Picture 1 (cartoon, rainbow, N blue to C red):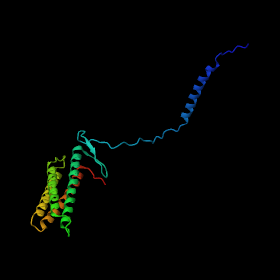
Picture 2 (cartoon, rainbow, N blue to C red):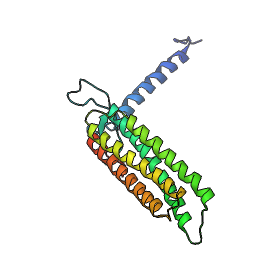
Picture 3 (tube, rainbow, N blue to C red):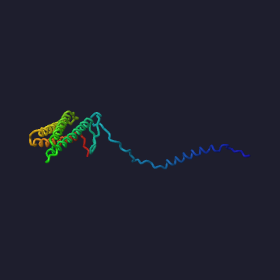
Picture 4 (cartoon, rainbow, N blue to C red):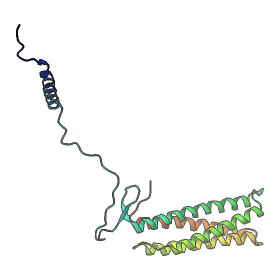
Length: 206
């Protein structure tokens, strides 16, 4: 009987399979296209940088038409002005609406309804004026702060005069003039907020 020189021929199968897999992987990888040298990583989100000469002070990216960074103190100041401005514009819309309804013929808003609404506007305008006066402007915005405080004071005074005119025996001339003055003051305040924004180096959303 012939003798099998290798009693376990199957033990060579696994090494051959492994060798074949290595060879296949080698040629497969070699066939892949090389990465383009022009490939760049996707840009990340906005970053904050220190303004030159500030010793690494913190800055904040402010959304706007052209972007830009402003110091954190200026960004916080502008944010407060935006909030106050929004509330002031809402008060103006309310005062104009009530005044128009009171003057309508036939009258759409009677005195018992108009008076508390005028009072709410006067109270709110005074509160906002006090808030503006209490703001501490960022460096370089001191002149803007003075103008804003003065305009807010005028708005509060006009709102109070509108209420007084409503409550008086005046036929309506004082009340109407005061409402017009309040609207003018709120418009001026909005303009001054934008001036402060420009002075701080920020730009408004388009």
